[in-house]
Structures are given as C-alpha cells and as structure tokens.
Image 1: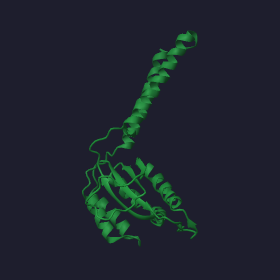
Image 2: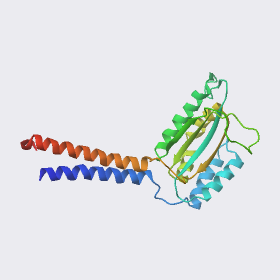
Image 3: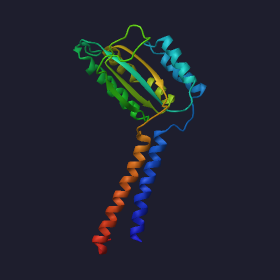
Length: 220
C-alpha cells in the first residue's frame, strides 16, 4: 500500500507540474480584443519617445493577432566605439550597454513565458546574396519567442521599459526586426522539453524507490 501511495505521489506530482507549466507557457486567452489594443496603444502614445509611424505599424500587427506564439527576428549592428551611458554619461562599451537593456527586458519577458530562441554572431562574408543594394556589416542576430502578441504589448507598456530602452538605442547603430511564425522546426522547445524532463525525473525517482525496496524490503 505504501508503495502504491509513493507511486501516485511521484507520478501525480510530475503530471501536476507538467500541466501547470503547459498552462503557463501557452496562450489560452485568444487574440487581443479591440479594447485591449486601444488601452495598450494609448499608453504607448502618451510616452514622449513614441514614434507615430512605429505606433501605427505596431497597431496593425496587434489588430491582426491570431492568438498564436511568434518569434521576433532581430538583426543588429552595434556601434564600433564606446558610447555615453544614458544614466552617467560615461563612455561605455556598446555590448555592455546592450546587456543592461537585455537583462531588464528579458527579466520581464521571462515572466510571460518569453525567452531567447537563438543568438548567433556573424562570422563570415555574405554568401549568395543579391537584390539587396548596399549591405550592412551586421554583427549578430537574435530570435526571441513571445507567447502571444498580448505579451509583446505588455512588455512594451511596462513602466520600466522606456528607461531600459535608452540603453538599447545607445548601444545599437543599426537594426531591423520583424515577427515570424515557425513553418519547420527541427529542435524541441521548452513546451515539450520541460514536460518530458518532469516525467523522466519521475521515472528516475520511481526506479530509485523500487531499487531501495528490493535492497531494504523491511524499510519500505
């Protein structure tokens, strides 16, 4: 009887944690409503650093919400020389300035189940590139997963975001980004890996309990 109770606790805990993670990691609230979009856009429009054209572009993106997750692709070129720290004015390495922004931004993003998918440095010349005109010597790309467009709006309207964003604009000389949705993926993300690891851990614990029972039958 004790053995059965232990098994139920082990596998029940793994199941509960897996379901809790899945409920948190995926969007179950559907697309943004018109009222939500108006609220977020009003908050952004009230900020002095708001770019009217950028806000129009963001509104179109939010209005086309399908409720699905997406990955934002960022292509970045940092300044070649030290830039003034937005807070102190001290010349600071651009990579350091960007890391200050990233720490603040990603810390908030993680709370909404967002996370980096890929960060990769440019390591060679352009290959089989045409039709682009003058090319920029980009430094690296990053891809960031958002649970939903609602979470993008929440991060953008976070009260600490404008201050952190100053470090991004100070560090980066040129950048462009656009949202993407996965068509083909040959690796597993946290949405699958975490539940698998939870059940794998439960299996190891269960095997350890069974091994102890066989070795010390009276102690179990």
